[in-house]
Length: 115
Image (cartoon, rainbow, N blue to C red; front, side, top):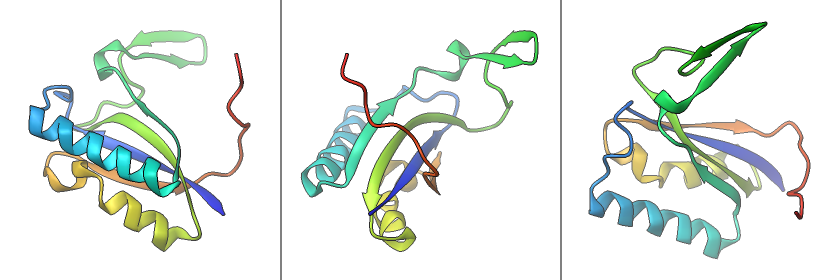
């Protein structure tokens, strides 16, 4: 099966989720885990904690100044793009009207390292 990265976008105020939104996100993650589709998932700290490198220049903040920032990423396995889009469509961020998701096929990588 192919792997797809689901990039979760939200407004820079991400992190001010209501208890209901937090519960919906947890249910969605649990559904992906229970289905066997989720490989890995990570929530990111707010964009103001980012540090960007441009050649030899180091700057505070995200690489791109945008109305939305990447709030998290998960990797799923799906038979094809349509199936991956179906999984992504269920992400609560798509429903909240302040963010969304982007789905990209994974070109390659390494398995998680045991440390």
